[in-house]
Figure 1 (cartoon, rainbow over the protein chains, first blue to last red):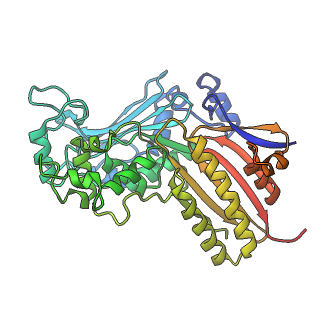
Figure 2 (figure 1 turned 180 degrees about the vertical axis):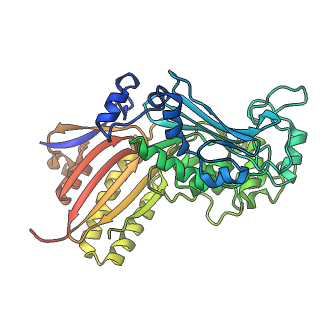
Figure 3 (figure 1 turned 60 degrees about the horizontal axis):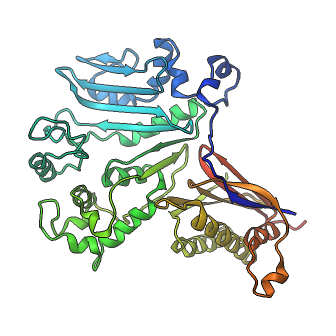
Length: 293
Length: 140
């Protein structure tokens, strides 16, 4: 007799069920994985201590925000972490307009009791804002994924932004993701997952050490088809502002063409990609070798 | 201090060549005997092929991460994927006679891995599905 491996019919839940976790268990075993829901069940000050690790102090310094008080210089850090919720949202917004976010980080427990990074926004407050979030009729575009404001998107592209960006970025993605590793270790968690919104997002997360649960082959196919003789390269025919012939050369150029639906020519769509980062490990994925941003 | 060597590729058959080259290069760099490198390459081929053919069935394939972790007395090869998990089952030793007679048979890949590696372990956790293969570098 020897042991063979056969496929499991169901996904494996890798952390205890949400209801099984309690603060008492947390106090008793430092290796017991904490969920967002568990942390959210704490008193506000206690959960703020946990979530403080998610925001790099240099980022707060950029705004003149006190890292302990979470306010200063007219700004404040907003924490939404309701008891009984499995989601936490931390943000710094324009003091004049709470819908104008400069920094957003949102985490959520997922179906297999892992943790998902739902959203990360790092916008430079001093950069021009582009109205890509609303279409000509004032309806939300959901970053151009549901409907599009093509006029604003073209302006944003010419200003050097990537799809779904409303302002130029302020950097800090490396620091925020390093802090996220610290937070996950604090919670006895070993990985975080996400769904990249755009090709640029996927490329950035590759650089930050993520691998793919789904879509690594798609990223390789995209790179291959943007090479000479490839179908995507051929489809950069100038038929729209987002499909200029030299777009294949850069991450942003490819991203805008993909946002514009160019993957149709290889019978694909930008959907269902999923990435994962193992705490403390860099996967070294590079689906666009030698990429120029 | 232990140094880790990681190579991640999409779960496609094209990855096998890259993994083989990575193992050869890393073993040479670490001064690991060529025979051990060869056995690691074959074990990697078998294990990765299994993941490629079955682990990502029904989805756009994700990644396979190959990690080599040397110690002074052994080298551990970890293959991590994020697809469908496997589960260990007890089974009979595959029928070599059937193979010789060109009859359909399965199970030789993993049997070969067990035969050439000093320790084999498989588990799934928050970090993915891991096949851990240990090859001792010192003689018993």
